[in-house]
Length: 106
Image (cartoon, rainbow, N blue to C red; front, side):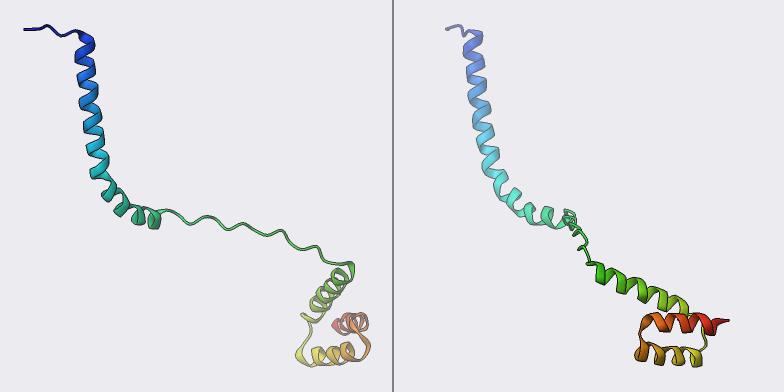
C-alpha cells in the first residue's frame, strides 16, 4: 500500500472541486437565464435626467414680466371691469391696460 503525500491529496481534492464547479455551472445556467427577466422587471427604472432650462431672450423675459403684472392687476377686478381692461389691452397694449387696472381698482 503506497502512502500518499499531502500534496497528492490536495491535488485530488482540487480536481474534485473543479469537477463539482463545472457541474454546478452547467446546471445553474438555465435557471439563471430564466430568473434574469424577472430580475430585470424587479429592478427600479433608471431615473430620468432633468434637462437644463433654456435661456430666454430679454424680450421674452420682458413680455413675461408684463404678463405677470397684468394678471396681478386684473385678478382683483370684477368681471365688468376686467372686460373694460381687456378692451384697453387690445387697443393700447399691456402697459396702458396695467395702468387702467390699477386706476379701476381704487
